[in-house]
Length: 412
Figure 1 (cartoon, rainbow, N blue to C red):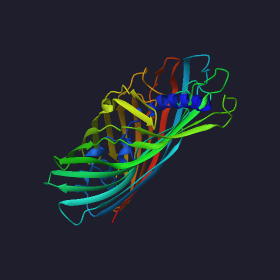
Figure 2: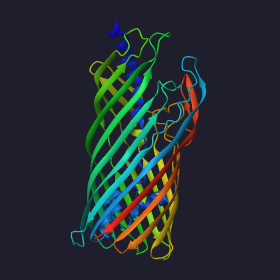
Figure 3: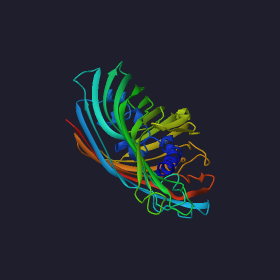
Figure 4: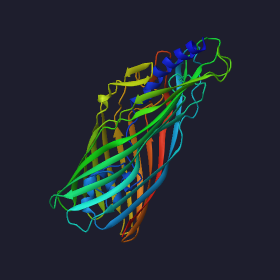
Protein backbone atom coordinates (compact mmCIF):
# COMPACT_ATOMS: atom_id res chain seq x y z
CA UNK A 1 0.00 0.00 0.00
CA UNK A 2 2.77 2.45 0.91
CA UNK A 3 4.63 1.74 -2.32
CA UNK A 4 1.44 2.18 -4.32
CA UNK A 5 0.67 5.59 -2.82
CA UNK A 6 4.19 6.93 -3.16
CA UNK A 7 4.57 5.42 -6.62
CA UNK A 8 1.52 7.30 -7.87
CA UNK A 9 2.88 10.51 -6.37
CA UNK A 10 6.21 10.00 -8.15
CA UNK A 11 4.36 9.85 -11.46
CA UNK A 12 2.61 13.14 -10.67
CA UNK A 13 5.91 14.74 -9.67
CA UNK A 14 7.45 13.72 -13.00
CA UNK A 15 4.78 15.52 -14.98
CA UNK A 16 4.66 18.64 -12.79
CA UNK A 17 8.38 19.16 -12.35
CA UNK A 18 9.34 18.82 -15.98
CA UNK A 19 8.27 22.41 -16.68
CA UNK A 20 11.43 23.83 -15.11
CA UNK A 21 13.28 22.61 -18.18
CA UNK A 22 11.24 24.79 -20.48
CA UNK A 23 13.30 27.92 -20.25
CA UNK A 24 15.25 30.57 -18.49
CA UNK A 25 16.66 33.24 -20.81
CA UNK A 26 20.35 33.87 -21.22
CA UNK A 27 22.05 36.47 -19.04
CA UNK A 28 22.85 39.54 -21.14
CA UNK A 29 25.25 41.44 -18.88
CA UNK A 30 28.38 40.07 -17.23
CA UNK A 31 29.68 42.85 -14.97
CA UNK A 32 31.72 44.68 -17.63
CA UNK A 33 31.54 48.26 -18.91
CA UNK A 34 28.86 47.46 -21.51
CA UNK A 35 26.42 46.59 -18.71
CA UNK A 36 26.00 50.32 -18.11
CA UNK A 37 24.36 50.59 -21.52
CA UNK A 38 22.22 47.40 -21.17
CA UNK A 39 24.80 45.40 -23.13
CA UNK A 40 24.25 47.39 -26.31
CA UNK A 41 27.12 47.08 -28.78
CA UNK A 42 29.09 44.63 -26.63
CA UNK A 43 29.46 42.12 -29.49
CA UNK A 44 31.16 44.87 -31.53
CA UNK A 45 34.05 44.94 -29.06
CA UNK A 46 35.13 46.64 -25.85
CA UNK A 47 38.43 48.20 -24.82
CA UNK A 48 39.54 45.59 -22.28
CA UNK A 49 39.77 41.83 -21.71
CA UNK A 50 36.02 41.62 -20.99
CA UNK A 51 35.51 41.99 -24.74
CA UNK A 52 36.14 38.26 -25.29
CA UNK A 53 33.12 37.36 -23.12
CA UNK A 54 30.85 38.82 -25.80
CA UNK A 55 32.71 38.15 -29.06
CA UNK A 56 35.87 36.02 -29.30
CA UNK A 57 36.90 37.82 -32.49
CA UNK A 58 37.00 41.20 -30.76
CA UNK A 59 40.29 40.44 -28.99
CA UNK A 60 42.06 41.02 -32.32
CA UNK A 61 41.90 44.77 -31.69
CA UNK A 62 43.47 44.53 -28.21
CA UNK A 63 47.19 44.66 -27.41
CA UNK A 64 49.51 43.25 -24.75
CA UNK A 65 48.26 41.38 -21.70
CA UNK A 66 45.03 42.39 -20.02
CA UNK A 67 43.08 41.19 -16.99
CA UNK A 68 39.48 41.91 -16.03
CA UNK A 69 37.38 41.06 -12.95
CA UNK A 70 33.89 41.97 -11.77
CA UNK A 71 31.61 41.34 -8.83
CA UNK A 72 28.08 42.26 -7.89
CA UNK A 73 24.66 41.17 -6.78
CA UNK A 74 21.23 40.49 -8.25
CA UNK A 75 18.40 41.55 -5.93
CA UNK A 76 14.92 40.41 -7.02
CA UNK A 77 11.49 41.68 -6.00
CA UNK A 78 8.97 38.97 -6.96
CA UNK A 79 5.48 38.54 -5.50
CA UNK A 80 2.45 36.86 -7.05
CA UNK A 81 -1.14 38.16 -6.98
CA UNK A 82 -3.60 35.24 -6.93
CA UNK A 83 -6.68 36.12 -9.01
CA UNK A 84 -8.46 32.76 -8.98
CA UNK A 85 -7.88 29.43 -7.31
CA UNK A 86 -9.66 26.33 -5.98
CA UNK A 87 -10.62 25.63 -2.35
CA UNK A 88 -8.01 22.88 -2.05
CA UNK A 89 -5.21 25.18 -3.23
CA UNK A 90 -6.03 28.11 -0.94
CA UNK A 91 -5.18 31.76 -1.61
CA UNK A 92 -1.54 32.03 -0.48
CA UNK A 93 0.50 34.29 -2.79
CA UNK A 94 3.89 32.69 -2.11
CA UNK A 95 5.38 35.67 -0.29
CA UNK A 96 8.58 37.32 -1.49
CA UNK A 97 9.74 34.58 -3.85
CA UNK A 98 12.94 36.12 -5.23
CA UNK A 99 16.36 35.01 -3.97
CA UNK A 100 19.30 37.43 -4.02
CA UNK A 101 22.43 36.04 -5.67
CA UNK A 102 26.09 37.08 -6.02
CA UNK A 103 27.48 37.78 -9.49
CA UNK A 104 31.02 37.65 -10.83
CA UNK A 105 33.18 37.20 -13.91
CA UNK A 106 36.85 37.26 -14.88
CA UNK A 107 38.80 37.37 -18.14
CA UNK A 108 42.42 37.31 -19.32
CA UNK A 109 43.77 38.28 -22.76
CA UNK A 110 47.18 37.76 -24.43
CA UNK A 111 48.26 38.92 -27.90
CA UNK A 112 51.32 36.62 -28.41
CA UNK A 113 53.14 39.75 -29.67
CA UNK A 114 51.55 38.89 -33.00
CA UNK A 115 49.77 41.07 -35.55
CA UNK A 116 47.37 38.21 -36.38
CA UNK A 117 46.77 35.86 -33.45
CA UNK A 118 45.42 36.50 -29.96
CA UNK A 119 43.87 34.36 -27.24
CA UNK A 120 42.16 34.57 -23.90
CA UNK A 121 40.19 32.75 -21.24
CA UNK A 122 37.21 33.79 -19.15
CA UNK A 123 34.80 32.53 -16.51
CA UNK A 124 31.20 33.66 -16.04
CA UNK A 125 27.63 32.67 -15.37
CA UNK A 126 25.63 32.11 -18.55
CA UNK A 127 22.18 31.67 -17.01
CA UNK A 128 20.45 31.14 -13.69
CA UNK A 129 17.25 31.31 -11.66
CA UNK A 130 16.40 31.38 -7.97
CA UNK A 131 12.86 31.28 -6.56
CA UNK A 132 11.60 30.30 -3.10
CA UNK A 133 7.83 30.43 -2.54
CA UNK A 134 5.99 29.88 0.75
CA UNK A 135 5.12 26.21 1.26
CA UNK A 136 1.35 26.75 1.37
CA UNK A 137 0.96 29.05 -1.63
CA UNK A 138 -1.68 28.44 -4.32
CA UNK A 139 0.86 27.53 -7.00
CA UNK A 140 2.72 24.94 -4.95
CA UNK A 141 1.91 22.14 -7.45
CA UNK A 142 4.00 24.07 -9.99
CA UNK A 143 6.88 25.09 -7.72
CA UNK A 144 7.90 25.87 -4.17
CA UNK A 145 11.62 26.34 -4.83
CA UNK A 146 13.87 26.52 -7.90
CA UNK A 147 17.66 26.84 -8.08
CA UNK A 148 19.22 26.77 -11.54
CA UNK A 149 22.84 27.52 -12.48
CA UNK A 150 24.75 27.47 -15.77
CA UNK A 151 28.39 28.64 -15.65
CA UNK A 152 31.33 28.18 -18.00
CA UNK A 153 35.12 28.30 -18.25
CA UNK A 154 35.97 29.43 -21.77
CA UNK A 155 39.24 29.64 -23.75
CA UNK A 156 39.11 31.83 -26.87
CA UNK A 157 41.19 32.25 -30.03
CA UNK A 158 41.06 35.08 -32.58
CA UNK A 159 42.67 35.60 -35.98
CA UNK A 160 42.94 38.93 -37.78
CA UNK A 161 42.23 38.12 -41.42
CA UNK A 162 42.87 41.68 -42.59
CA UNK A 163 43.11 45.18 -41.18
CA UNK A 164 39.31 45.26 -41.07
CA UNK A 165 38.07 41.67 -40.56
CA UNK A 166 38.69 39.39 -37.56
CA UNK A 167 37.33 35.92 -36.76
CA UNK A 168 37.21 34.08 -33.44
CA UNK A 169 36.03 30.99 -31.60
CA UNK A 170 35.27 30.27 -27.94
CA UNK A 171 35.06 26.72 -26.59
CA UNK A 172 32.81 26.61 -23.52
CA UNK A 173 33.26 23.99 -20.83
CA UNK A 174 30.06 24.39 -18.87
CA UNK A 175 28.62 23.16 -15.60
CA UNK A 176 24.90 23.23 -14.80
CA UNK A 177 23.01 22.39 -11.61
CA UNK A 178 19.25 22.10 -11.16
CA UNK A 179 17.35 21.75 -7.87
CA UNK A 180 13.58 22.12 -7.87
CA UNK A 181 10.92 21.50 -5.21
CA UNK A 182 7.14 21.28 -5.50
CA UNK A 183 4.14 19.69 -3.84
CA UNK A 184 2.18 16.86 -5.41
CA UNK A 185 -1.60 16.58 -4.93
CA UNK A 186 -2.65 14.85 -1.74
CA UNK A 187 -3.68 11.21 -2.08
CA UNK A 188 -6.46 11.70 0.49
CA UNK A 189 -8.26 15.06 0.73
CA UNK A 190 -8.08 14.88 4.53
CA UNK A 191 -4.27 14.72 4.46
CA UNK A 192 -1.37 16.99 3.57
CA UNK A 193 0.30 17.28 0.18
CA UNK A 194 3.33 15.18 -0.59
CA UNK A 195 6.56 17.06 -1.23
CA UNK A 196 8.77 16.27 -4.20
CA UNK A 197 12.27 17.43 -5.07
CA UNK A 198 14.41 16.79 -8.11
CA UNK A 199 18.11 17.57 -8.29
CA UNK A 200 20.90 16.83 -10.71
CA UNK A 201 23.89 18.31 -12.50
CA UNK A 202 25.83 17.93 -15.74
CA UNK A 203 28.90 19.16 -17.60
CA UNK A 204 29.66 19.45 -21.29
CA UNK A 205 31.04 21.51 -24.16
CA UNK A 206 29.51 24.15 -26.40
CA UNK A 207 30.91 26.94 -28.53
CA UNK A 208 30.55 30.52 -29.69
CA UNK A 209 31.68 31.82 -33.09
CA UNK A 210 32.40 35.48 -33.71
CA UNK A 211 33.40 37.96 -36.37
CA UNK A 212 34.18 41.66 -36.21
CA UNK A 213 34.47 44.16 -39.04
CA UNK A 214 36.09 47.57 -38.46
CA UNK A 215 34.61 49.79 -41.14
CA UNK A 216 36.58 52.84 -39.98
CA UNK A 217 38.44 53.90 -36.86
CA UNK A 218 35.10 55.16 -35.54
CA UNK A 219 32.70 52.42 -36.64
CA UNK A 220 32.79 48.65 -36.13
CA UNK A 221 30.35 45.76 -36.34
CA UNK A 222 30.18 42.40 -34.59
CA UNK A 223 28.31 39.18 -35.39
CA UNK A 224 28.21 36.14 -33.08
CA UNK A 225 26.60 32.71 -32.98
CA UNK A 226 26.08 30.85 -29.69
CA UNK A 227 25.45 27.12 -29.95
CA UNK A 228 22.68 25.32 -28.11
CA UNK A 229 23.48 24.01 -24.63
CA UNK A 230 21.53 20.94 -23.51
CA UNK A 231 22.35 19.62 -20.03
CA UNK A 232 21.07 16.18 -19.03
CA UNK A 233 20.46 16.23 -15.31
CA UNK A 234 21.23 12.80 -13.97
CA UNK A 235 20.26 12.97 -10.31
CA UNK A 236 17.58 11.93 -7.84
CA UNK A 237 13.84 12.39 -7.53
CA UNK A 238 12.88 12.36 -3.85
CA UNK A 239 9.34 12.38 -2.50
CA UNK A 240 8.67 12.87 1.22
CA UNK A 241 5.42 12.29 3.12
CA UNK A 242 4.93 14.87 5.92
CA UNK A 243 3.09 14.03 9.12
CA UNK A 244 -0.55 12.99 8.84
CA UNK A 245 -0.25 10.98 5.63
CA UNK A 246 -1.51 7.45 5.01
CA UNK A 247 2.14 6.48 5.32
CA UNK A 248 4.29 7.19 8.39
CA UNK A 249 5.53 10.79 8.76
CA UNK A 250 8.88 11.30 7.08
CA UNK A 251 8.49 8.28 4.79
CA UNK A 252 10.22 8.89 1.49
CA UNK A 253 11.05 7.31 -1.82
CA UNK A 254 14.15 8.22 -3.79
CA UNK A 255 14.81 7.05 -7.33
CA UNK A 256 17.36 7.90 -10.01
CA UNK A 257 15.93 10.43 -12.46
CA UNK A 258 17.04 12.13 -15.65
CA UNK A 259 15.83 15.32 -17.26
CA UNK A 260 16.97 17.59 -20.07
CA UNK A 261 17.04 21.38 -20.21
CA UNK A 262 17.70 23.27 -23.43
CA UNK A 263 19.28 26.71 -23.66
CA UNK A 264 18.49 27.89 -27.18
CA UNK A 265 21.07 28.79 -29.79
CA UNK A 266 21.16 32.48 -30.70
CA UNK A 267 22.60 35.01 -33.14
CA UNK A 268 23.43 38.64 -32.38
CA UNK A 269 24.55 41.57 -34.50
CA UNK A 270 26.02 44.71 -32.92
CA UNK A 271 27.33 48.12 -33.91
CA UNK A 272 29.56 50.65 -32.15
CA UNK A 273 29.99 54.16 -33.57
CA UNK A 274 31.94 57.13 -32.20
CA UNK A 275 30.04 60.29 -33.08
CA UNK A 276 32.95 62.43 -31.91
CA UNK A 277 35.58 62.42 -29.16
CA UNK A 278 32.93 62.55 -26.44
CA UNK A 279 29.87 60.64 -27.66
CA UNK A 280 29.41 57.05 -28.83
CA UNK A 281 26.26 55.11 -29.73
CA UNK A 282 25.75 51.34 -29.59
CA UNK A 283 23.18 48.92 -30.93
CA UNK A 284 22.51 45.17 -30.62
CA UNK A 285 19.79 43.06 -32.22
CA UNK A 286 19.42 39.32 -31.72
CA UNK A 287 17.33 36.19 -32.26
CA UNK A 288 16.99 33.21 -29.89
CA UNK A 289 15.71 29.86 -31.13
CA UNK A 290 13.40 28.89 -28.26
CA UNK A 291 10.76 27.37 -30.57
CA UNK A 292 13.10 24.40 -31.08
CA UNK A 293 12.46 23.19 -27.53
CA UNK A 294 9.61 20.89 -28.61
CA UNK A 295 8.87 18.68 -25.60
CA UNK A 296 11.01 18.14 -22.54
CA UNK A 297 11.54 14.58 -21.25
CA UNK A 298 11.98 13.46 -17.65
CA UNK A 299 12.29 9.80 -16.68
CA UNK A 300 13.17 7.33 -13.94
CA UNK A 301 14.11 3.69 -14.33
CA UNK A 302 10.46 2.64 -14.64
CA UNK A 303 8.47 5.78 -15.42
CA UNK A 304 8.70 8.60 -17.90
CA UNK A 305 6.95 11.78 -18.91
CA UNK A 306 7.23 14.60 -21.43
CA UNK A 307 5.25 17.76 -22.07
CA UNK A 308 5.21 20.30 -24.92
CA UNK A 309 6.88 23.56 -23.96
CA UNK A 310 4.97 25.74 -26.45
CA UNK A 311 7.71 28.34 -26.41
CA UNK A 312 8.36 30.59 -29.40
CA UNK A 313 11.47 32.36 -30.67
CA UNK A 314 12.44 35.56 -28.89
CA UNK A 315 14.12 38.73 -30.13
CA UNK A 316 16.58 40.96 -28.32
CA UNK A 317 17.08 44.68 -28.91
CA UNK A 318 19.45 47.00 -27.06
CA UNK A 319 20.47 50.62 -27.54
CA UNK A 320 22.98 52.57 -25.50
CA UNK A 321 25.15 55.66 -25.42
CA UNK A 322 28.48 56.60 -23.86
CA UNK A 323 29.61 60.09 -22.87
CA UNK A 324 33.28 60.79 -22.11
CA UNK A 325 33.38 63.80 -19.83
CA UNK A 326 37.17 64.04 -19.92
CA UNK A 327 40.17 61.72 -20.09
CA UNK A 328 39.23 60.04 -16.81
CA UNK A 329 35.44 59.92 -16.51
CA UNK A 330 32.97 58.17 -18.82
CA UNK A 331 29.23 57.66 -18.31
CA UNK A 332 26.82 55.25 -19.97
CA UNK A 333 23.11 54.66 -20.28
CA UNK A 334 20.96 52.26 -22.26
CA UNK A 335 17.81 50.20 -22.58
CA UNK A 336 17.18 46.64 -23.78
CA UNK A 337 14.02 44.75 -24.70
CA UNK A 338 13.46 40.97 -24.91
CA UNK A 339 10.21 39.65 -26.33
CA UNK A 340 7.84 37.28 -24.50
CA UNK A 341 8.55 33.57 -25.19
CA UNK A 342 5.34 31.96 -23.88
CA UNK A 343 1.59 32.55 -23.51
CA UNK A 344 -0.02 32.83 -20.07
CA UNK A 345 -1.77 29.44 -20.49
CA UNK A 346 1.62 27.72 -20.81
CA UNK A 347 3.67 29.81 -18.37
CA UNK A 348 4.82 28.13 -15.15
CA UNK A 349 5.65 29.47 -11.69
CA UNK A 350 9.02 27.68 -11.78
CA UNK A 351 10.30 30.17 -14.36
CA UNK A 352 7.76 32.99 -14.81
CA UNK A 353 9.43 34.48 -17.90
CA UNK A 354 7.69 37.31 -19.77
CA UNK A 355 8.90 40.17 -21.92
CA UNK A 356 11.81 41.96 -20.26
CA UNK A 357 12.87 45.62 -20.29
CA UNK A 358 16.29 46.55 -18.92
CA UNK A 359 17.19 50.10 -17.88
CA UNK A 360 20.90 50.74 -17.34
CA UNK A 361 23.26 53.41 -16.04
CA UNK A 362 27.01 53.11 -15.54
CA UNK A 363 30.33 54.86 -15.15
CA UNK A 364 34.05 54.24 -15.55
CA UNK A 365 37.04 56.02 -14.05
CA UNK A 366 40.49 55.76 -15.65
CA UNK A 367 43.12 55.79 -12.92
CA UNK A 368 46.08 55.46 -15.29
CA UNK A 369 46.91 54.24 -18.78
CA UNK A 370 46.90 50.67 -17.44
CA UNK A 371 44.16 50.67 -14.78
CA UNK A 372 40.49 51.62 -14.69
CA UNK A 373 37.50 50.87 -12.47
CA UNK A 374 33.80 51.08 -13.12
CA UNK A 375 30.34 49.96 -12.22
CA UNK A 376 26.71 50.00 -13.25
CA UNK A 377 23.16 49.60 -12.06
CA UNK A 378 20.46 47.76 -14.00
CA UNK A 379 16.77 47.53 -13.28
CA UNK A 380 15.07 44.72 -15.18
CA UNK A 381 11.28 44.88 -15.49
CA UNK A 382 10.27 41.21 -15.86
CA UNK A 383 6.67 41.93 -16.88
CA UNK A 384 3.40 40.75 -15.37
CA UNK A 385 4.14 37.06 -16.15
CA UNK A 386 0.47 36.11 -16.10
CA UNK A 387 -0.33 32.47 -15.31
CA UNK A 388 -3.64 30.91 -16.39
CA UNK A 389 -3.60 27.29 -15.21
CA UNK A 390 -6.78 25.24 -14.87
CA UNK A 391 -7.24 25.67 -11.11
CA UNK A 392 -4.88 28.55 -10.38
CA UNK A 393 -4.06 31.87 -12.00
CA UNK A 394 -3.02 35.47 -11.58
CA UNK A 395 -0.07 37.73 -12.25
CA UNK A 396 3.03 39.01 -10.51
CA UNK A 397 2.27 42.34 -8.85
CA UNK A 398 6.01 42.70 -8.22
CA UNK A 399 8.37 41.23 -10.80
CA UNK A 400 11.67 43.04 -11.08
CA UNK A 401 15.38 42.57 -10.64
CA UNK A 402 17.96 45.10 -9.45
CA UNK A 403 21.52 44.34 -10.56
CA UNK A 404 24.57 46.10 -9.09
CA UNK A 405 28.07 45.47 -10.45
CA UNK A 406 31.59 46.81 -10.07
CA UNK A 407 34.63 45.99 -12.19
CA UNK A 408 38.34 46.59 -12.60
CA UNK A 409 40.56 46.23 -15.66
CA UNK A 410 44.37 46.07 -15.89
CA UNK A 411 46.69 46.25 -18.90
CA UNK A 412 50.30 45.16 -18.44
